[in-house]
Structures are given as structure tokens and as C-alpha cells.
Length: 479
Image (cartoon, rainbow, N blue to C red; front, top):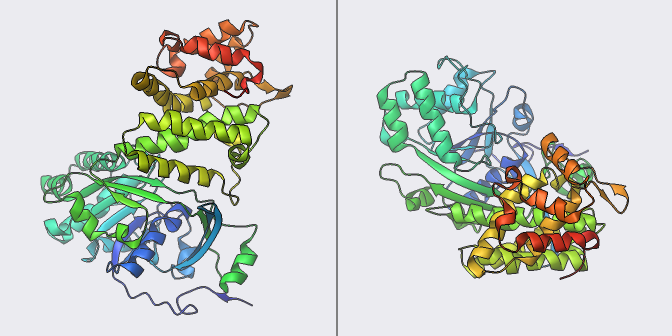
């Protein structure tokens, strides 16, 4: 029988000072941030532990504490064309505080003089203001409210000392997540009529970082957990699987006496051999991710699905669709971006390897959710920028648009397509495709400004090119 994993059975005592307070104990943070901090402890002089705060009443805190914060991360992926598998026991987590059960223990965490950082991942909906949080002396419902209460307790405990202000790095997947969190906290300060000194402490001395995170984390491997536990030699009920690829871009916001370099020195995660970038502006990296990674997904789906394929891996490894998406990325998307060609090419190559990961089954139909709005945000900017920069039409991205219009007909080769979009979008396409006139369908779709934010029939040559591709059988002909 295997031993239960804990610090006693693994001979891994927790002897590091807590330097990070983390809101969230879920799979992503444990396979991304805590895994990185564990490597940073090993390869730099950071020497810090993570104290986790359970952000919801019913979470995984008890499970994490039962294992004294220990767990294994299993990485599976493709690197330079070869399968890669790595397993690491993560020792950076000290334990979990449940503020719903012990509010005073939660506040006590703010009194830690060693504390330097706050990290969070409370879902995209987590950074919101809730006017129903009216009592700063009790645990608020919202994450920003909880954080405001904690920071206010720290401010009072250390009598407003500027060197006890923290660096906050939210990982929620929203644009300008650091700016948004800071603005929400300032709103709570006003809502609760807290003192001006605290507002100044937050606005001038607390560092809020905008961040971009990227790693696919499938989570607990329920189908193979017994084999993994035999391999690691412990009964670990917190095993988390992830792809090998990872990227963390960190942009510190303005604070008095703080620069990007000072945050980088205090949190030297990039010195641990990890794909982490400290930048003054992460906008180009967000654009790169949206246009290349997300854009490739969105551009590929209708073409691949109509071609009879059903998973991302099948699509990339298919002779026609694989060539289509690679050329679309390298010849039509990358030329519209402003980072170095070498950096963009490397990122694109990494994306294709991620798409081919044999350990992750990614269904095309799941990516197809809300494909029209996704095309508008992820692909259309590349189309318009390509036309602007070259004076030519991006043939493959328009082929994808034509395939998207055909996809929303709702059937292919006589079989129904399980479309998943808003009722308004589905109703529009159903009405548009009631016409047997292909030209009329294309004109109606491309001129719908609610779909695209602009009238695409006014872009010279675009409607004619799309109409020609839609008219071809299944829009599957190679260019």
C-alpha cells in the first residue's frame, strides 16, 4: 500500500518564510504559479513559500492541507517534435486558509512582515465590484472586497509603512487585470468610506501588475491516477496534469519608486529558466496570443470541420488543413504583428506543437462555440491589417471566413452541425441561408455590422473573394 503524501512521509519540511499570498487553490495556479515558484526556490535565492486563501466557501483547502501543501505536477507535451513527460513534486505551498471558517486567521496573514506578493486566479468574473458588500469588518463576498479588507488590515498593522505595501499579480483572463483590480479596490475604499491615507497607500505604493498567462491545464488525471501514483510512489490526490508549454508576461503598473526592473529583481522567476517576461507593455504579447494562438484555432475550425476532421491534432496533422493553417499563420497573421519576426515565428512553432500534443484531445466543435464573435475579435483584425499593410487580400483567412459562413449553414455532407451560438446569431444565419442565392447570402452576412463591427462589403474585393470561395464545393479546394 502506498504512503499518503505529506511532509512527514516525503521528508519535506516547510521551512521557508511565506512571501506569497495566493487567492485560489485550483488546478491552474498549482500547475502554473506554484510550480514556477517551486522552481524559483530551487534555482534562485527567492526562498519563499505560498500561503493559499480559499476564495469560495466550498473548495479544496482541506485536501491541500491534508497533504501539507504537497502535490505532483505531471507535464505532457511535444518539444522539438518529440514527446516529453516530466513529473515534479511541488513543495512551495505552505497550506490553505479558509476565511469563511476563520476570518481572524485570514486577517492575521496580513500581519506577516515577510509577505511581498499577492497572486490570484478567481475566474474572469472574479474581479468585480459588489455594492452588497457593505461591511468592511466582515468577510465580503467578492474577491476584490476580500482583498481590500486584508490590505486595510495590513495598512493599519504596519501604520501605513510604504515598504510594507505589496506587489499584486492577478492572473484572471481579462485585459488590464491589474489596472481593473486596483480600480475596484479604490472603489471599495470609497464605498466603505475608508481613510485617505489608505487610498494613498494603495494608489502610490502598492504595485498592481497586468499579466498574461498561458498554459493548458487539463487537471486531475482521473483515468490514469492509479498508474501515476504507482510511478511517484505516493497516494497523491492532488496530482495535476498540464502541457509543457508555459508563458507568463508581467507588466508592473506605475507605483512610487517602482520600476519593471525592481519587480523583476524581487520576484526573479525569469531567472529560473522559465518562459517569463517582465515588460513595460504587454499589449504586443496579448495581441500575439490572440492573433496567433486563438486566431489559428478560430480560423482552422470551420475549414477542418467541413473537411471531415474533428480534433485539433487531426487538423494540424492533416496534409491539407495542416498546410492551410501553418501558411495562414506565417504568411498572413505574422506579417501584421510588430514583435520581432524571430520571436513571432518561435511562438507560432510552439503553438503548432501544442496543437499536436497527443496527451490533449481538443474537440473542434468545442472551440466552435460563438465562432462568429471569435472571428471578429481574433481573426478579422489580422485580415484588415494585412490588407492595410500589403494592399492585398489574405487568401487563407478569407477562405476561413467563407468556410465559417458555410459552417453556419448548419449541415455538411448531409449531416447536421451542432452549432452553438447566441439565439440571435443562429436565427440570422438560418434566415440568410433560406436563400438559394449564394451571392445574396454572402452579401447579407458580410454587411451585417452587428456581426463584424463594420460593413465588410465596403472592403474592396473582399466580398467577391469570399463569394467565390463559398460558391466552390465545401470551400475545401487548395489555393
